[in-house]
Length: 166
Image (cartoon, rainbow, N blue to C red; front, top):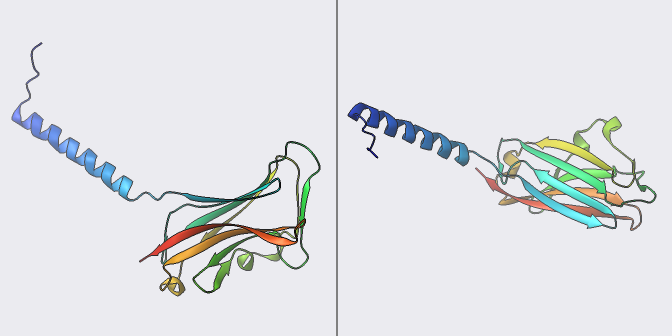
């Protein structure tokens, strides 16, 4: 086989195209955030809490999704009920204090005080939280998905740790 011969101009153009492609790939990978997911399991209930990024940065939104699923194959629905607080919530914690809650930013009609989950059913809440200057001294933020489980009378949790960057 005869090797393909490129002119000087063609080879420089080919090298330039390769460099541009490498730069585009590098900057698109460098700008990517990876999702972080945590789980909590109690009885036939699985709580999944997920963020769209692996760290919190002051002023940049963090999208949080919490899903509660009844993983039973059959049987009666699981009923979550509370008269004094929502049965599902998302809580942001700093080192020593509770910060914002999903429930504090919702109109009353969005807050569930009773949730019935038949086998295989899920319920999801979502929230976009923006870290503020209050978080500047935090090294790590704890993102908690919580739900009230009637059988134990306790609040169950699934947590994620997000480092804070500036």
